[in-house]
Image 1 (tube, rainbow, N blue to C red):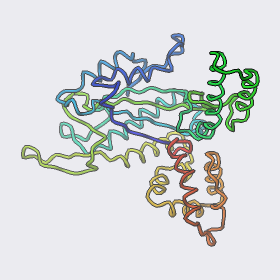
Image 2 (tube, helix red, strand yellow):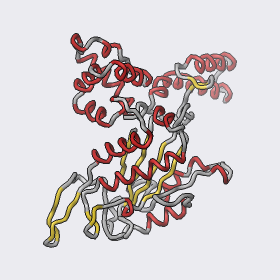
Image 3 (tube, rainbow, N blue to C red):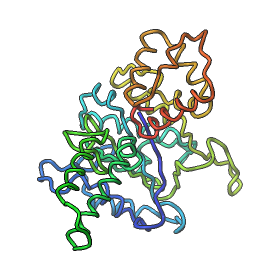
Image 4 (cartoon, rainbow, N blue to C red):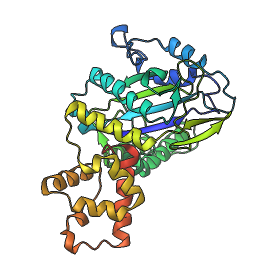
Amino acid sequence: MYITITAQSLSGNFGQSAAAFVDYLEKENQGKPMPELAHFFDQYNNEIAAEEVIKEIDNNTAKLKKSEPKFYSITLNPSQRELKAIGDSPEVLKQYTREAMKAYAKAFHREIDGKPVSVNDIKYYAKVERQRTFKSSDKQIQENQPYASQILELKQQIRNIQGGESKENIKKLQKDIAHLEQKAPHQLNGKRIVPGTLKPGPQSHIHIIVSRKDVSNRYSLSPGSKYKASEVEMNGKMVKRGFDRDAFYKNAEKTFDTMFNYKRNYVESYTARKTFLKDPKLYFSSITKLPINERALAFKLLQKTGVNTTLLQIPTSKLQLTIKAINALKKGIGKAIESGSIGI
């Protein structure tokens, strides 16, 4: 499970309203008939209209400054292995989202009217998306790029010929283009993968838009708080503050495992991701010390992302990773983490 929390962009197309972001989340509905439309939902309601989401978020901003985010975006990104475990069911993902948002509420070190923050204090709207597309940062696009550049250059030559600027043979250039299209290393259904190509396999994920203010529009609940858990004196009274992201991520992961009896491998865990970022040597060492079956699965999951695990398969007692080897492994695993492809 790969989870992100991002503050609303306060520049560009987003401005002071949630409208642009909600419109972005409506992209999968374009061209679909009414029965196939994916709707927003919250903790208790389904089929919430996009217009209502915009209205509710935009009107829940009391006393927020123009320079402050009005909402946050949370994404819950199950791995393909996790999706297969639940049958890639949108309804099951809705159930999970509602439970995960309870973990989100509990991560606030705050009280409202003398009680800990609960999910009923959170104003949020979520949506399950079923598709993902390849982006320029993906490995497949980057490794296809040299071929894409050559194809673009040949197409420009053809345009020059058609404009009377050259006398070269168009058919030969078209043949060269076709050859490059087939030679590109990453193909899908016989075609070169380009930005915007739909990714294969289960790709469901959840987008959540969360108001900065609580449902009463009185209290600010910011998951972007730099305070993890502390107390401060305000108006002569001690007030709790802070948000524990680690607690949210871990509990959201634990919620998934408990709900669906999911047997999480070490490399899929949030703990592993944190270890990798802080101490890569300990991360690699932890993998080599896993029980045989779990270690084999860890290698398999990493290999699926293109990580070369050969060096990790040396017996632990003899494992001597050079700086060069560690950097190579870090690069591969780092890309896997960024794409969420192994769920960490």
